[in-house]
Length: 415
Image (cartoon, rainbow, N blue to C red; front, side, top):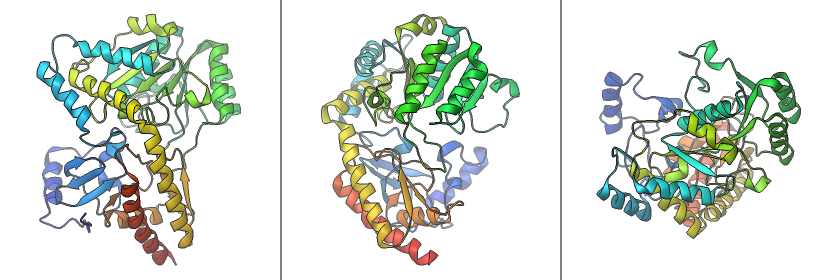
């Protein structure tokens, strides 16, 4: 593995590509993958990926702890998934109607997801969450949707974190509560009780730039109780965490079943797909609303999803991610103590978040991840990261070699 100094040299391929992009793409890059938000030195463009490794366009190799910001759950280019994709591609990808694989995938989702009586397929998480909200409103004939403050549920006007181009009317019926705060939730429900269509919750609190919070049993039970009392839909946003916590749904360990759930990210190991699953109570509404997309019936992502879900079950992929995640968390804790640094590691071990104490501007966090990058490990200073079933204990040990040097460098710079 080569280490990367990754300064943007004038003639580096990455720098040249950024210059070209700036002329034809507004801002050069959009959204969450724009590395302008990261410390200077991160590559924007990549040449290839395999397993848990990335190679940027300048030939630098990294162990990747972002997994494409979540979609890669079995590893880049998983051979079983790609074989299924090629088999389906030989028959047809996008046709005038859906392929048989659509029914097979819907059946598999209903079999796998604990609450699901049906499934609707789409392309990305924003599609899925917007459909969930629309279905809930159609079924309840009410308007208000309660959402946790700071939560991310997509990039449509009703939920995007940016207010550019968004009108007050776009969010007129969205109200807020504090995640994991039962009193705040009850107060919000009371304020809109007669017009409450849904309570929308993330699998756990994974807001950026702050410590993650797992849902408390009391909070999850309160969400279910209040939805039952008011007739509102309990919508679980499992776009980010789905199939990394529990194959039956991320709130299954809590014993709480949602009425509707949105899925994407890991559902097809990097192939573009999303899904809405729901209970029979919402079946008619799901049929009545009009949701569609020109590419929603693409067959190869569905074949990828079938292969992904089946393989995850066969190899117990979640257990594998927990094992390596625990190894990483324990190793980082030991290293931080060795160098006298205070870090917090929050959220599920398979979706790690690492923050430094007394570091509101992420000065230490930025130093840490850039030093790790220069040692061949791709991390993020304030977004939760992701492990996959392709990460082995040997990979984690290699990561810990890099973080040892990175933490030592942070300690030396802050002493």
